[in-house]
Image 1 (spheres, rainbow, N blue to C red):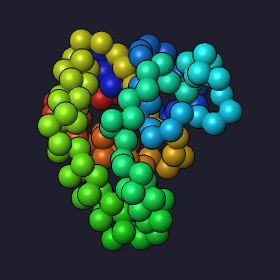
Image 2: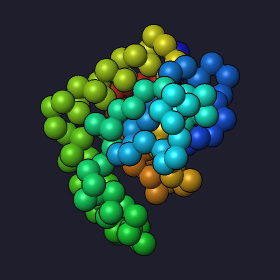
Image 3: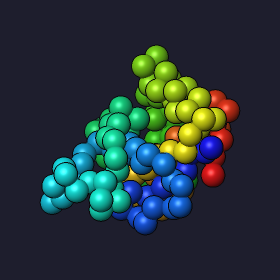
Length: 128
């Protein structure tokens, strides 16, 4: 059993499990009834996405230093008790079932999901 870190909208992997969208906004122009069938996500969990202010900072990060500043602030946001509990839940679930967590960004290295990956590993999650 594992968690996969995925790009939303990409083809699903075999046995990927439940796909969780950790994005601030649903996909534009897609009816809610088609989110899962179009490989966006099965469940929307915006609680694990950066705040609107941090999304702007991430999109503007044009250097390693700027990205590191974003990462530090995002980790601080995810240190809030309710967000820590969500990360703990996902890590625990990864030991018992397959699931995936994702965002729309093309480059995972410059996406908040890279930080989610690190935090899940720190919590003992099994990653694919």
